[in-house]
Amino acid sequence: MESRTNELNRAKGKVAEDSKMIVSEGETLLKTVTNASADGYAAARAKFAEQVTSVKTRLAEVSRPVMKKARQADEYVHGNPWTVIGAAAALGLLIGFLARKR
View: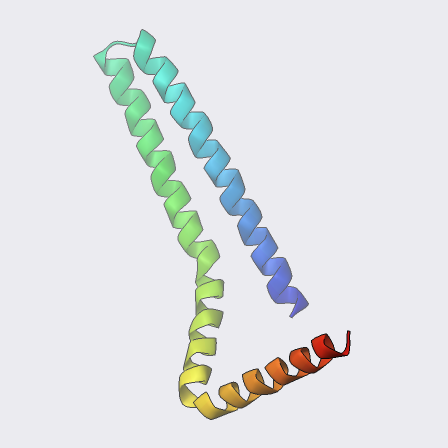
């Protein structure tokens, strides 16, 4: 469980870092466009598009393990619906019992 949490935290950190980079590059692109010729604009736009593609690729790589775990959980729920319903009902009863005591 702890390894999954660490993996998810690392993934969130990478996504946040990549998002900041895209925003920064977008701001740079806007500044470049105001002072650049058509060639400068094309070069800045190509660089920005390359970085966006790179971030999308990294995001797909980072999200792959999370999506795999989600698929496994989904398959378990579909394969054992009554077990999941029973566990949810027991948890609900326990929470209700503890809340009633207060």
